[in-house]
Length: 128
Ligand SMILES: [Zn+2]
Figure 1 (cartoon, rainbow, N blue to C red):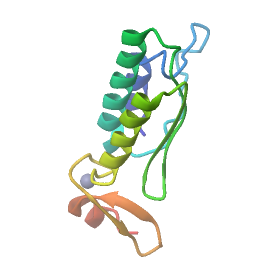
Figure 2 (figure 1 turned 90 degrees about the horizontal axis):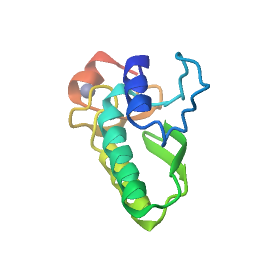
Figure 3 (figure 1 turned 135 degrees about the vertical axis):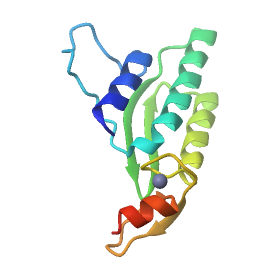
Figure 4 (figure 1 turned 180 degrees about the horizontal axis):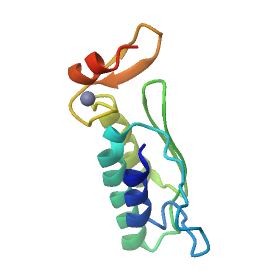
C-alpha cells in the first residue's frame, strides 16, 4: 500500500494500529496489500473502533493486515464474535474488489502462478 494511504489509515485509527506518541512521524505500520483495498480496511477499522467505543471493551489491535492467497488477511487481538463478523465481511469483499484500484474484480491466476483479485483493466495493465 502506498505511504499516503497507509498514513491516512494510521491517523484515522491510531488505537487500532497501536500508534504511540513516541513513534516517529514517518512511522509506517506495514499494511501489506494493494491500494484498492484501503477503503475496505478503513470501513472495517471504523466498525471495529465503533464497537470498542460503544461497548467499553478492551481496545482491538491489528496484528497483521496483508494479502495472502489473493485475498485480504487480517488478524486482530481482542476481537469478539461481532468483530470477527466485521473482519469476515471485509475479507469477503476482497474476493470481489480489485486489489490495485478498488473497482469490481475477480480472482484469477496470472501466468506466473500468482492468484490475485483484479479488474479487467488492471489485469491488462499488469500481466503476470
Ligand atoms: Zn483494477
